[in-house]
Length: 173
Image (cartoon, rainbow, N blue to C red; front, top):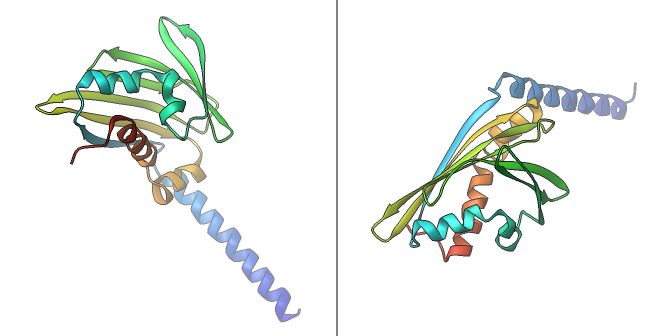
């Protein structure tokens, strides 16, 4: 066998072993995770609430959302579908207490991930804090590995805060 063929076979074996290791590691990770971030805004809770609660306006300030379609309510709960980078994800408002708490959840059961986001607004002397807690589930072991070790469980929350900060005039330190 030529040295070139041996090199190719060795390289192929390495790639297969590395991929297998990634999938095995992902399979050993827990399906569920929790990520949490808090940001301060020099805006009253109502201003932040209006931004996070108005899902129809998301494409105006969230660069990751191209379009929002309203879906029929279910049990009085508003539902919508976000279109983003060729992907569609359907959500519903699970719980809402104006100006203080909003809970949204993914309602697509066939996605390789799911979960809910809890938004908690607390007034401060110069505005409010917003805490976002993601209680997520990653069903696919490969995606679980990527979520944990490549882009991190809080990547979507971080991008959301960045966009919301731009919309509302920045996050306070």
